[in-house]
Image 1 (cartoon, rainbow, N blue to C red):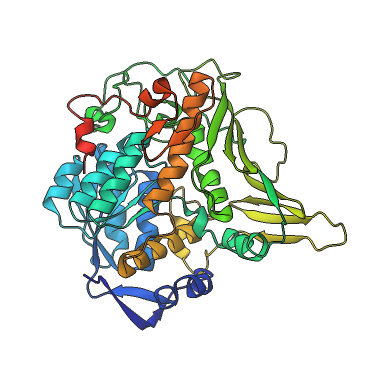
Image 2 (image 1 turned 180 degrees about the vertical axis):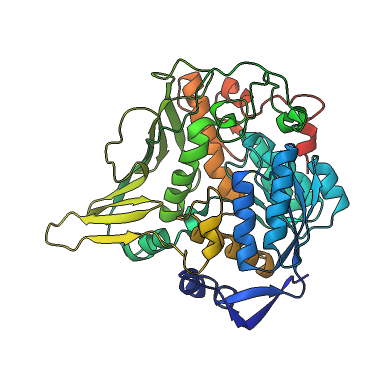
Length: 455
């Protein structure tokens, strides 16, 4: 069933419009108007879940009918914020259990902004319930969860967009089009990706009683139940391997996904990684503070490096990627790009991040908004909607999100085992490595079961 009608009297605002025209045609330059507002639910009503929802609300008429979060205080606040933004001024139905939300509401779209350890079960249950899904990256904590997510999306014929919105970032689209695709770099044989942010939350908070407004058991779900030492929001959960894949899974997945998109790369032939906790040993955090990974392709290596201490080699590019070609070098981040030709007489090129603060003034009052990412997320949502309408795959289709996520997970497995790995997506095994293959699936905490992943 076609959810959309195009109303040519309404137009997108800001720089997104011109990019959308060339990328989506009529779907992009005109505001996509459904015959009636799309029914939307959000699972995970924290910082980025709300941010994704508000960007969707800016580009298409929706009725947010339901929100879910195990933190009742956060959930109540989210309900109030949504009611103030949506045309009906209705407060969505509020849930502490996402399964109940899916059972009691017929939804066109479900956004998943929960912590990483919840993404697989929630995405699979949402497509089973008949919804199209926008799920945050990384899509999973283990490799076989990602395989199950792809299988479910295909079985139920649903569009699943992954929140790797660098592929919808205006200045990066321009860099790809004007520099990479035109061959200005010449032969490309090396990519560097990196993050030097001091973002590894680390401390020794005491074990304490769980507050009555927080369902810690539901928040933990299939992950191991750590002793409660305070609300896990705002990066505390990201510092533990129980819930995600560290900075490799949080930050590398963005830049590796961007490199694959720019250069048309699929699965790496081989993945190796080294690292550990070399400096910041004083706290509870168990994710690496220092890590290098190599994703190997024929005639090309993509190399990742992160450190959560010290200074970046280039303060202008603390998180980004650099593509090296025989004719020049292209540095890129969420904020800008710079092309430096090998020929000193040739022209250097520079591009900056697009901001749409004047066109979307509500961005300026939104708590913790990433203003540089807002235009990219709006364009990413439009791509998602256009794919639903056309029955095509979105730019960050679940399969692409799986390749980028699983490659980062395999890098962590390689670091743990101390040897390179080659993954076979056909057999869903690591070539000639039963020990590594056994690490492709984590154990679920009861009563949650991996059988729930079966589409």
